[in-house]
Image (cartoon, rainbow, N blue to C red; front, top):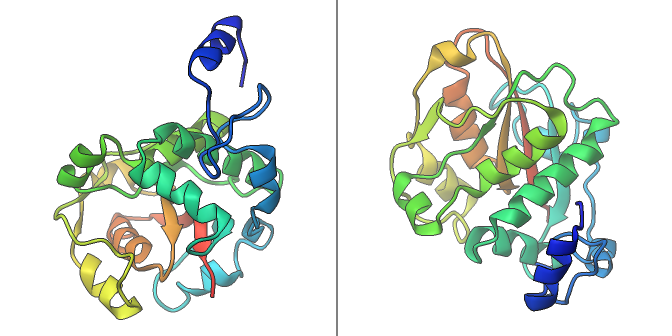
Length: 232
């Protein structure tokens, strides 16, 4: 991040805060302070994108090329505050910055090789109006800034507003998102290798519901990326 004189002045008037702990950020820090970064458990799934705990969720369920998450997620852990901030505390900047971080971390391993476009998991219109933004799209925009890949936000839509997945079991999560996605423009993605992006993967139900719809377009190949992966 370029820290201009104007930015320094604004930071003096309204200090930037770490989204995880709330402490004031230094000039060299962005979104997450260095102390909280030290406590993040990075998943490193991008080093084995064909066979890792997240990829295995989809084996026999949906064909995938690659799968990677930036960090391991657990409720009440340091990383939970990152997810809460971008979902519930009006921090689209956090989603963007973490997407860019994931892209930088994954790039050296060639994770984005062969990917044609990024597709954020859509929110329902009602939920997006309430939140003011789609956090998955902000993550995708952060990835796009680093990779130069296009973001296709209009090829799939969420047709209904469903209850939060947070307190549901695996089977309930699958039932909750069954049939809620619809393909809008199959021609725009025909023959492409798409990277489907969301904030968190727990059972894979949302990714699977959305990804299955994308795979109905002719010749589509699919990979997935999330910020967090819930581990037991």
